[in-house]
Length: 274
Image 1: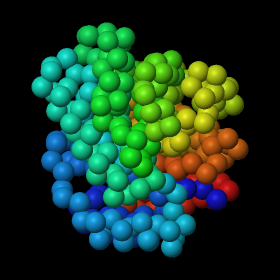
Image 2 (image 1 turned 120 degrees about the vertical axis):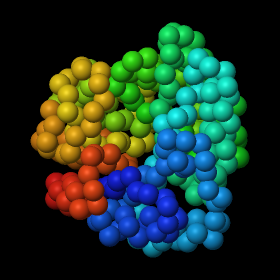
Image 3 (image 1 turned 90 degrees about the vertical axis):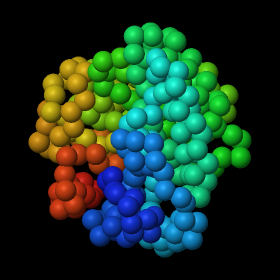
Image 4 (image 1 turned 135 degrees about the vertical axis):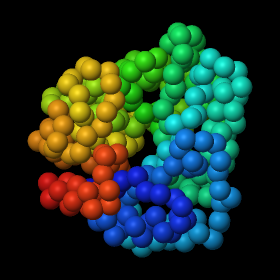
């Protein structure tokens, strides 16, 4: 059994997303906690959130992977953006308490010529500011492709952030197949990549996978997603990732350039690999 799904719109509420996930053949999904290109967030409807949690239990869902907006950059060079992002992170984690036990994924950020070391300190500081002992959500740092001044372009940078986080039981990693490929990790040898991940970070921290093909060659540092089997990684390699014994039980989230029918086809394809 695999937990597989895709990004869904939250415009019609929590329960509607759960029903849409099932309609597409999935048993998990991702959603943006607020407008992905802005900062606005809708008021939480507790009854709707509770209805989703019951629906998930009744339909054997895996954990959800909520996603922070792209505008959040807790290591921004401009202080106002950095502070706005810290408050956004804090608010999102409070909101996630309405969906207990799930994941909140975010891009570590871009240092904008401040340097990686300075950015790592800012990212960890923001996490320490936002995360509280009473929170019931695990924050996931996403592996990045390394375009521009992105932080998290390799496992060592992710580990450096984790080392500076106080509440380590509340921090994990989401491995993005397109990003690690574009970042230089050849996942055609997934055994080797997972071995490196385990040595640097620890496989116990790998909580979720963004399952994407890539438009780019290995080590291109460009981050352009492609449909499963239509990119430079290829379906056979991604099949090895999805069916790898060490990755079973984790939510796999599609972020491929698709419409609903496309996602339905990809989900059916991936389920056929088992």
